[in-house]
Length: 227
Image 1 (tube, helix red, strand yellow):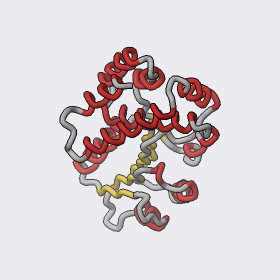
Image 2: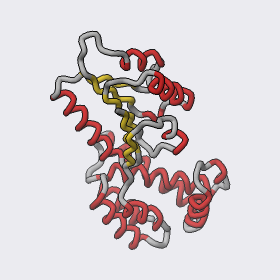
Image 3: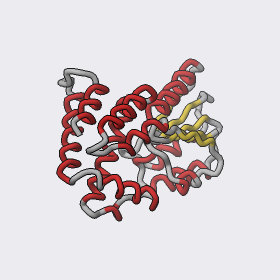
Image 4: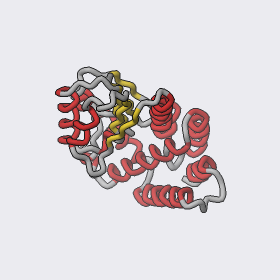
């Protein structure tokens, strides 16, 4: 059985994956993990093959979004060609496009989307809208992991910089998404966006190096308040 776990809500999807690993270990199943680092299709062929000692397996193809398109196609072909008796999990830290999902006609698809409050917060960002953005940020923090909020906030600011510099054609977004970003970018000057991104990078650095004197949640609130 093949299950695909994907979407931007990586905290929840990762928790589900970790739970499946714990369950497999309790059942004395072997856990085999395939990653993009140094990947060879033979690695997958080997783990899909029946075990010599008839041991049950949980096979995880991790960080699927980081495999190249040709590697993803080869993986799908190998799974289709060699249907396995084992539990197979594909995990991706982003929403996989339909064309990628269609590579696997026999699958259980589980999409993990962030709470809508997070998108309301991102859409509210404006140099003249701090108070509402702070309210929506706190609503999002009540529903989502602050790490996920930081990740999507940094991505939104990067997208706005791309639009503000006139390179929106480089964005792999639907037309309505591009139009929304174009409208939102008008709420900032380019220097404001660049400063905002620099502050996010600094916040991330201090967080990862243990130099942040307060919580990541409070750090995000300070950034929004200083817009």
